[in-house]
Image (cartoon, rainbow, N blue to C red; front, side, top):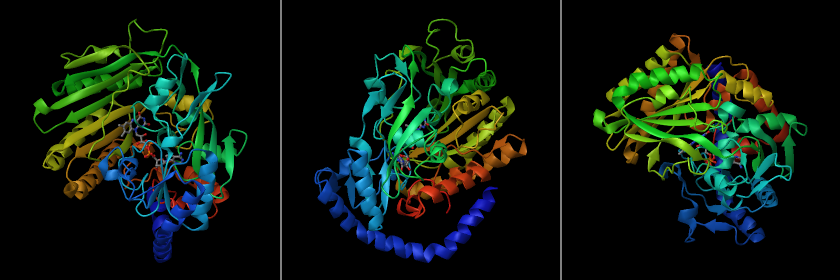
Length: 501
Ligand SMILES: Cc1cc2nc3c(=O)[nH]c(=O)nc-3n(C[C@H](O)[C@H](O)[C@H](O)COP(=O)(O)OP(=O)(O)OC[C@H]3O[C@@H](n4cnc5c(N)ncnc54)[C@H](O)[C@@H]3O)c2cc1C
């Protein structure tokens, strides 16, 4: 299925590649003219390379995601975005879209020589009068939103780390502490305000442009620039039981076994969740730790026994134990900006032996291939998507991520090496691709493979849109054709994961 779609891209690409290169070259030359045109409309909202504020405005969570746009445009309203898109399209200027800027690879949210739309001024948060949803600007970061809504008695699914943005995390599906209770973040968006390729500002929901509404639930930046997200909320004390526990690497077997049991039992304990993070700083056990990110969002059971989490809570010895009653505001731990990172992801069906198998392959690959890279931190994580998450998605109309028919308890594995020196970029990319092949070969060989690639954790050499399956990809391509016949979001917005058309 995937090879067919790659073939399709290649054949189309070969035919059009010369024309496209020419088109993009002249488009890059147009950027200065587009910057001037947008500055004429919004004199205080454009930053150029010569400006003092450029470096800070162009910073990304990780240095290796940073490019050099000709100018940065800071819209304040959907109308500003609409004006900009009309100018960019009329003059064929390439542009990028950045929300929280946490995608850790170059080109997803920044651009060389084009215009970077930066949403940091559109970070408004407002609760609806009937307290059923919150309207979020795309430039909001989740921690600020938790702070602003602190004390309202409302909760909602959002990012688990402070700096991740509303825009990217939500359009990529979005995994939150509440995923077990209400599905993915995208499943809970009841209305998108979006600027289309022709500059139209639309409200897109289950009744208006329902096809586009579905496409946005996992379809990333392929259809327009989203200028507001209306996210369902629910009454909640804003207190959760959870936090971080760290245990030594020598309890790995018990951790994996208990994690797999938690995933299997999660239908009965939908609010209990655990993400495992293995942190290997060298091959010596002294530099290796297991971080257990635990949560139970049932606010009626804060102090009682947390049956599903208990086996993980019981692990001894603990290097750190910060698990207890906490708030939505206090739980996220800051992840400071880093130098170089890559995220690569695979998905597989939960079974204790498969978790152990994936784990052993990853460790072997680290020791054999990655460990020679200087100043490397080898980080990898396991996040559950049990079948009841899919059921929650379906209750809310489903999404386009190819999981609607899944009856398996799935686990996402995320490989996230962190390193310092750009000289090792190519090695890390090649080794991560090798890892991916190993994991796919192994999980397929034991009948536990899943094609799903979580956009939010995917590497540039992956194809998450194709991973949703042939019919979903065709649907997405059809929606693109309908709302963006000129393929603005395929060609003029080259960054991110595209539809291969
Ligand atoms: C420290 C850390 C913690 C993380 N935690 C989580 C987590 O808890 N749950 C989870 O699901 N993921 C998580 N992720 C992954 C994260 O969701 C992705 O990196 C995501 O892309 C971040 O969103 P962003 O807005 O910050 O990214 P950006 O890089 O700004 O945007 C990501 C993509 O979305 C597009 N985009 C952004 N805004 C818009 C818009 N308004 N309209 C159209 N397109 C847009 C961009 O063009 C880009 O291609 C984490 C990542 C990191 C680095």
